[in-house]
Length: 131
Length: 131
Length: 131
Image (cartoon, rainbow over all chains, first blue to last red; front, side, top):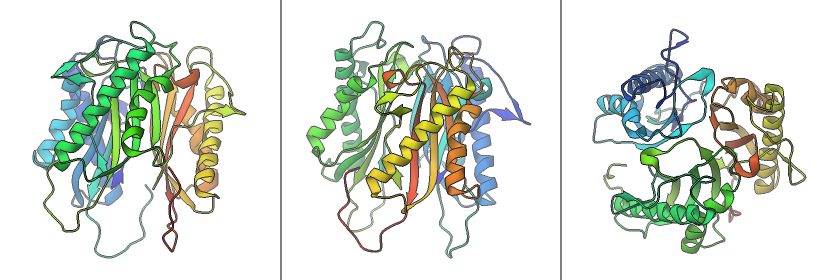
């Protein structure tokens, strides 16, 4: 299993969109930032493994969303991430998901993703790069 | 290990109770919804494994509670879930627990549970159903 | 892997500092409580394993911080925990990290830590103590 650090919706080192679901961000904007954070998770996995070839599937996806107390449409926002992973790994592999609304996220991000991937074990042992 | 998706306190496809701890829900009501979400976790495990026979124990329980900022009695609410699992798996097995209060949960739920179970490995390899 | 329950910044059974980042607690105070919660995670690992000798490294660190909605300096607070683990396990081992701001924490704590450690497997099988 490959555990990644939380990935933010950052593009070129800058937040793609700042804000809070239920306040100044729409569900559609939330889906877009979730998609961007997913791409960053794949980029982080690639950086760690050297390529994406060894990435077998997404095992677990945690979607944390900065929301108001009243917001209740978490599933739709999280689908912005899930749909991308389903496109990549196929619908039949599936993934476990936990989604919730938080008070605040680093650098004011509206979404952060936690991901656990299953990776292909190399046929011989090599010294592993730092996680 | 069997990772499950977040389970909500849903009965017949509907939230058992909506609301927020520290506002319109009592600790006792919180315990009851935590218990219902636990039953749904067991139901999801059963659906995945075919039966509960292969479920050896609960390894990790995460209890997310929709609360006010002032609420501090998270442990009592989470016991509504822990007590059920202790009844089923016995006190000696124990489980690791992380409990916290969040801003909002999907469909306005007051509680969501994350669970990781240890399962009995089958003596021969079969093609696994989708997680 | 050794999963621990959430560890609080408790000293002698009492919260070291109560409060909320962005409100009545400074980032520096947040770092200090994160450091105390880290020491408690190590103490819990020691209690579980008998000694710290079998602790190989920290695999994953989750830092939950009670914050205002406006707070955005989560990384600095979490460094109070990460820096301690880097001192102990060395910079080259690294660890995966997920940090976010929550509505409320048990007993009014400003910080709670979730930790997953890699432990040395014993050369012979023994009956394991309770997790």
